[in-house]
Length: 275
Ligand code: G1P
Image: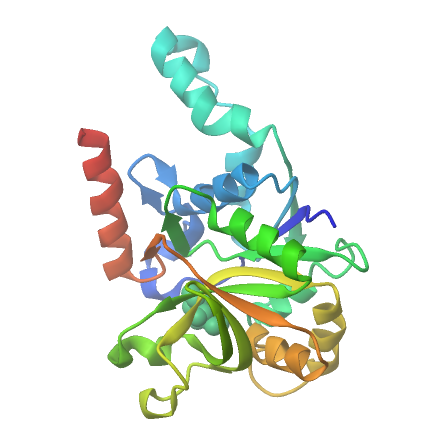
């Protein structure tokens, strides 16, 4: 089983960063020298995912322009900087194809995944990377998760321990069985529970390996009121008998979807540059 597709939902309206996001997509907000979305694009490419699909809404043309245009002043850079630029952007991106899918309205993460219904091969698994969640570690998390999906013939979601007072901002899993120190079989999931109702302290991080079957499940949930939640669809996937594993990531995670998380990420990458 080869996992090739990476879906990167980037159609969110970025309310936490208004008024800036009137003009700049939140995924293009910089972390020193790279926009946040480039971190997940690089993670996907480092994990040998070759077919990248960025789901975009209105006002996101800057993302398309960024990944498609070569740097026009490359010739003026000194030899050393030219090499660095090539290494960090163009050469790496050349290892994959990036295509864009439209999500006309931000109707939830599940709805964003549905926009990829025609590009995901039947009977295959595909990956989802949320660009707000930036993971720093020795291995690309999504690559490890793809291996786990292949070995176990199962869907895999990333999780992390979160303090109880913050748990209601996440999808939270309930464990059927601990398989080893960082791998669990999931019995159920709940999206953004009240802290007193959270079934564990293991919160979903924005990395998923999912079977094609989830598309039909999401499709059947359309028209329900509110946003179409991916977490609810994964719950239904378990109910159909599909095995869903949770991988506790060893990475440092930055939630750049909030000003606080963004500032922490800036601190990390900025200090790294000084070393
Ligand atoms: C989404 C998911 C949630 C997950 C989170 C991780 O929520 O719905 O289950 O825990 O990403 O970042 P969002 O942050 O888009 O509200």
